[in-house]
Image 1 (tube, rainbow, N blue to C red):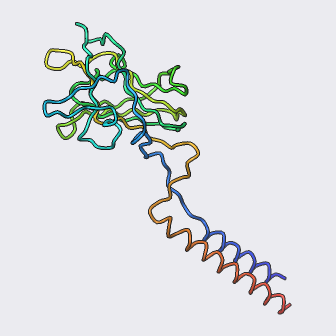
Image 2: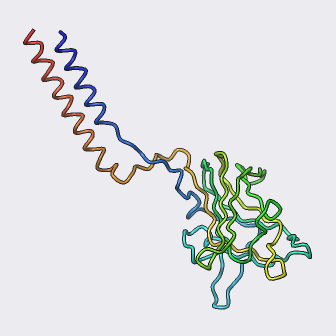
Length: 228
């Protein structure tokens, strides 16, 4: 009886152990990429070469394209005189804890007075995000400033940056804010976890190994029973 119990425990341990597969977290996934952009105005800039700085370009994952609003001017103190915001409709609720914004020279002041981050579940009532900011002091690759905000996980469908005051640059305040990329990092609710690089091959191997181990278990139990 002792032999049979020991064989059973060993075989089950092997089967269950080999059947375990690790999955990667989606916390580093930009869930805003390719989703529906929103803005306080549909007026956008057109560059000297004819490029239209449309809203979708801030969510396309391409750091060489950008959105640029038009018709926004600051007053003598740098405050924007109209509502200025850019955001994303995720299409469904997502859970996220980090937002990264790649700004062009024309951007809000890098402070709580310059802009706030907000979320909503109905696209009507907005709540400020209590975030910890790392402001990009210099442009990256001579193209954009990178601001990173981290915070406790939030679940919502709509996310936006609400801009209040232009950044001082060359003795003037900048108007017409422009964003290369607006990135929201987290997981879309209800979506399965993304398997790591080798998961597609690990799963069938693990299942096959588990089945083999269970076959070994049955053979061992029958043999042990005959030996009793």
